[in-house]
Length: 639
Image (cartoon, rainbow, N blue to C red; front, side, top):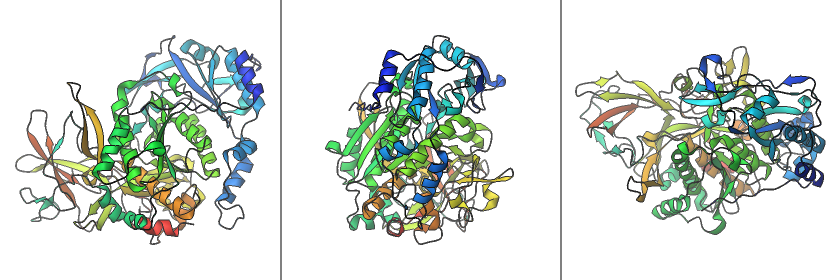
């Protein structure tokens, strides 16, 4: 199904007329001021790979700050203070815009200057937070006094300016950030992880377990508990097993199925088979289908003009299926709206900005991100403003904390993730989950996986082996510690240099692919035949829609949205609403067989709870946060 393109134009006739007439630039051509932080840290001469072609078309956004930021800060504080008469008295989008949107004159000044530089103005959202424009490399370089180059980063060549762009001094006081002059959001990845590449590229081969310990083997030495059989990894849990382990089934028995609720999911691209995939998944597990308006797709306005990059479409199609299916599994009667960047991940910030400003849903699930070290300060500043608007309107924004632990193995330095490190979002980490034969909760431990291979006589390297992936977490290098974390997050973990910083994740659910879930997605075979295949999968892309689904049930139960969850969540630290995920008494590992390119089968040992430099511990920890939710308790204890 093709996505709908819903474009809500500004109601102000004066602005529309100015744009239509090609309003001339009004900013003086004199003094210039650099926009600090717009150039990413990776755009260095050592990484340069050449100049960007002068004719290439670039789409970028100039972001304005909220009017009366002090007043907005005070409003947010009151909205989340239980002692305040304004507690949870959310603003509508119209109320928020009336009080805090940039003025029409600011937007006209920016858009007029852009048109004067020869750019085409593409989009101004109703909240007037940014102006999106399009032009050639030559126009960008002349207007912003930069050189646009390609830089080698994270295994790709990504464009960026060679210095911070400048704007006329008369515009500078109103401009908070410029995004899109670099391609950093093309580095944002879906946060899902499979035991092996999905078919037809490859597959995991049996045996595998239907529940924890279902299939075991004594053929291979157990390096941690000598003489004890090793369990095989899970074939993928079904919705009923996840429901019973986390107490979601109790909520369903109380009639909480998500009626009247909407969950928004952001991503890039649009899977052409999403409805068939979700309906197949739903039929298999006894869930209602997504009929009629139960599912909708929206292309974020302006993102069609981003240059198309189809290289990552399959990974985003997998992400979309995983997110939609498992949010639907938890809240089967909730409506789901997928808000996507039309043809390139570089429009992800536009997608979530649209979902917030149009108040598409009270719960927004986001399973993408990148290490903080790859994100520019300008992008962080821009999205932080979006998340403040979400919090003021009673929208809960949930982001996956990432799948590479402290990110050192991925980018060479320890780094939290973004947008998950923003203090106005809820960061969702991952666990390894053991569900028993009867569907009961056995245990959880932090998700962090290391690997050793069986040589025929020994495990190599010596267990626990080499780090593969794990729950993202740790202190932000940018955002200071928010008040809700004070006294809960250990200072030793939150400290970065001399300050206490925002630390993540905030809570966690199952994410380990070794204890992952089943999902359904269409694959195209080399001969062109399409087939829906049930695979198992994990990652914080799984834990995030699970949490989002639970919060949709919580909103249904209370009859009103909970908004930004963290202030209430941290007040529940140590309560029955959350299970403190701690290390197991003895190290745990599972077996899995891999099909090698030559057709042989290699047996591997996957050790659990070994997450880079991050460690699971009693209380809040940088692998699992406050722990995992006991869904029925959490929903009934939230205020």
